[in-house]
Length: 211
Image (cartoon, rainbow, N blue to C red):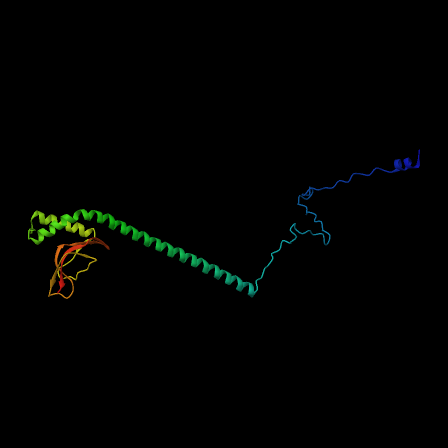
C-alpha cells in the first residue's frame, strides 16, 4: 500500500456543517435579525439607464424664461387671430344666409300678392266711386284683405302731388301745366306696390309737366 493511500485512510472524515436558517429562534421564540451583507465599497450598481434614482432639478435662466414667454404670447396671438377670422367668416355667412332667406321670402310672397293685385285695384276703384259703404259686407271683406296684405309686408304708394319718378312711376299721359315747376303726379290710375325692398308693380299715373 502506498503512502498516499495510508494518508487517506488516516484522515478522519469531515462532519457536515448544519446552518440554522430559521427566522424564529426555537429556544426563545423571537424573530432573528436578518444578516445584512455589506457590499464592498464601490460595488453599488447604477440603473440600466445610467442615472441614479434621484430627483434631477432643472433650472431656467432669465433668457429661457423670456423666450418661453414670447413664444407663448406669439402662439396666443395667432390663435386669437384665427378665432377672430373664423368668427368674422361665420358672421358674414349668417348675414348672407339671412339676406338670401329674406330675398327668397319676398319673392314667394310677391308671387302670391301679384295674384291679388287685380282685386286690390277693384277695391281701390270702388272706394274712389264711393261704393264702399261702411258696414257693408264688401267693405268688411276689403278691409280684411288689405289687412292681410299689410301683414305680408305689401305697401301701396303714389299720391297726387308727388314728384314724378320714372323709377317708381309709369306715366300713362302727360299734360302741360302752368301750376308745376317739375313733373308732378296729377292723377293716380293704379297704385304702385312694394314688398320690403322689392317693387312689385310701378304706379300708373298721369303727369303734369311744366309748360
